[in-house]
Length: 235
Image (cartoon, rainbow, N blue to C red; front, side):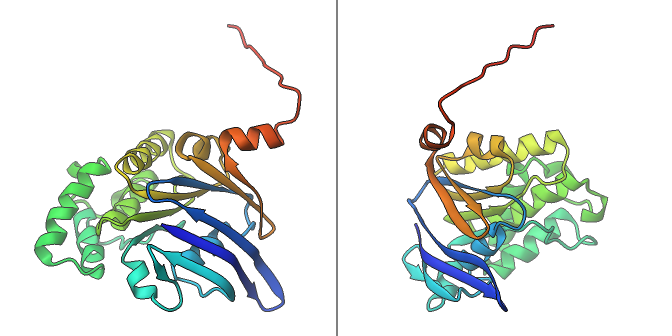
């Protein structure tokens, strides 16, 4: 589904991404872990065709980013860190807008909006303006916007930052369900427990380099050390 080979990105004299390589099979859930400023967002921006890569190769669904970017984008849904919604429009109106931006007809967008609102658990708020929503609800609609065209690859950039526990759990369950239906997922976070719950494989990025990649078991065996300390808390 995705092949990234030695991709690099620099702004001026500062290199942000330093030759990252990884690939994803269709239906896989892949976690990108790393601290703020590690290069996670730049990496997924290059994969989604939003930021041009300086060198290396990226293919999505067989289409080459940089040469066949428009066709590759048809297969991708992106959930950015920042809320990409119009606050004075309703949830339904926002989904209709983004659905049409993806090329859906009015009828297709209307039907899909109903499906997506149910999926993200906000059917009863369909006619309410986004400006009246909590932070967690906005993020759920933000995810819904990326699902309107039924993408094959869903890219999520720290979608649970700064939200309440209930919305966070709902988002994690939604991502889990999407992956179980066969959707390929890239999930970036600096919360280990999220990628541990959601992802088949994990890549760890630091200072623009992929310093480790593998399954949870692989990484624990390589990086966990020889000593395990178990704490039991009573009462």
